[in-house]
Length: 148
Image (tube, rainbow, N blue to C red; front, side, top):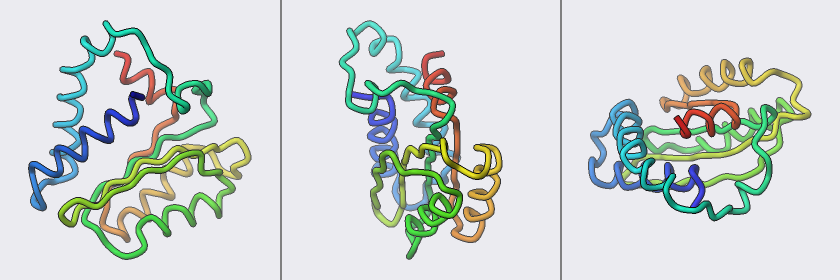
């Protein structure tokens, strides 16, 4: 199981247990705590590469996580920003649990006309309008952070 899949599954489980009153900050803290608790056991197992892990992680891909109350057009709005900035969608997974929206996607920024930092700023503006939290990290930094 890939790190991204594990984090996504943990996030879904946390939202399921906490219900509609869970704040994105609380969910992020709990997911981080659970992942860190599992990390020693995961590191002791031999890796089984998934299709997402076979491709090298580099600085031209971004991991984008979106959390908040469900609403119309959240995914469409975020995907439009990626299209407008010439980012390619590599992978996406999203779910709605008890009115809570959770989405994780990977975008290739090789042909983007803006930097990942500028993309993050643009998505933060969108997040305010959509009333969601959006986290953007370079994929290589995302992987490094979860190996700590």
